[in-house]
Image (cartoon, rainbow, N blue to C red; front, top):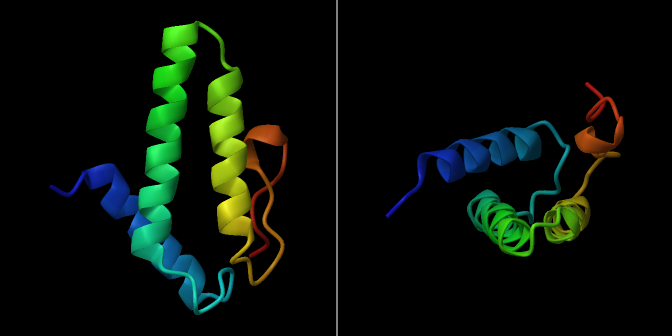
Length: 86
């Protein structure tokens, strides 16, 4: 079953790949699944432990995974960055 948020993320990653922000070898579908799983798992653990640290760790791991496919510099929007250059 496809999850709408995951579909939007995959579409966004495909757009980033088309603009050269991700290398052509990056798989938008698989990357979206990794990011979505990290967010969901991080949220579940954060809620279970009543601590935001698992979510931060999961988001950082998802960011590093995406960054490994980066064609241009990406920034973490949750850390005060201004996003990828346009």
